[in-house]
Length: 86
Image (cartoon, rainbow, N blue to C red; front, side, top):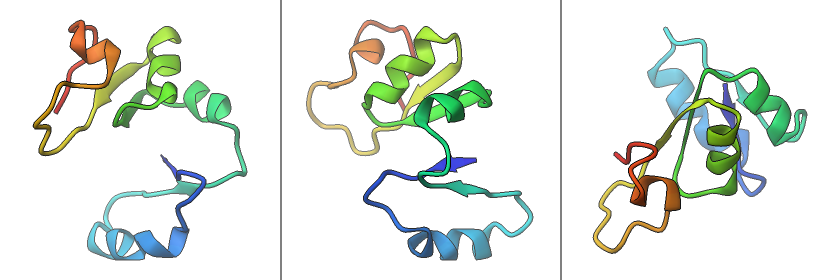
């Protein structure tokens, strides 16, 4: 399941659905709250959002994705080696 940012549109991700058609990709907008999404998630990937912190507090497997990171990491959990950064 992919929880879209409120600014994102599902149509923007259609190329991923086509490219990875063998994966059961499901995109969620505002149908579910962030907490409901976290409750059913095994893994949570994001950049540096509060949702990652909430997932960590709930005991989820969390990874901060920060491609091309060239400055100090803004994610407090990865700065303190509590979650991995990729």
